[in-house]
Image (tube, helix red, strand yellow):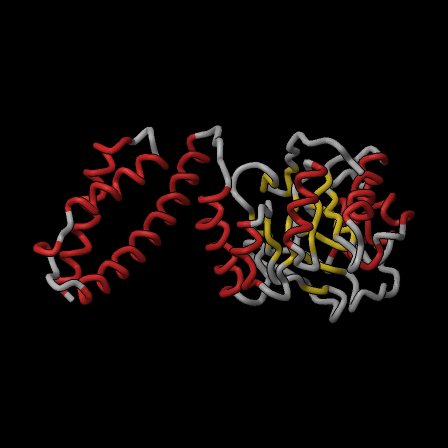
Length: 302
């Protein structure tokens, strides 16, 4: 088992996986059907089975030249992690390798496949949990230092839980390109077939990820994106606070501005200052006064 604890970052297409916000991957394609390898495909034919920049699982070694030329990364599928000749050839493409966990595989076996890829000279390895064992995800991330993503193709409702558990990325809407031979993907590469699922995963990555993942943006653009994520989380929390405060108004003997409790508000600000010492009580008091007044005005309007 790898004992390297230093956090590694792998660039997958235009995404930095393992550093900063959790990413959402919507262009995961398999050239297999139901885990059974299809007939061997030539380089040209395989290339037409997926959009450029996709994350692709080969059906056989014959697909690898097209994948190397067009894909963002290669998937070592859960069903063939023990096919070491194919794993070795996949690693030899030089593309980032996403190692899925075989059902029932131990942490040691899972990390062993990743280390095998690294031993072939390709250390751009991302681990992928497919069984939704979020505790194992945490252990893999801590033990290996490698990025760990989660395939949520079967249950995108767990997006929030996966991000909270430390997932560096989410895969949504995986497809099999071997079903009908048609091109997969168009436009922005999002071909999950369900914008709602992709939106749910993006929300989880933005909102929950903001609370649990530290970010160190290095450019103005990255800073603005990080601020946008924090602002989205703030807006969501403020809306929820206003909703609860509105309920409180109906339960108080005296509602509205007359029912304000200065001692409770002061205690609230003091508790917040312990979580945000750089802001301090004075600044937080002004912020929370504005929040409380906005909620009271909204309650009166309703």
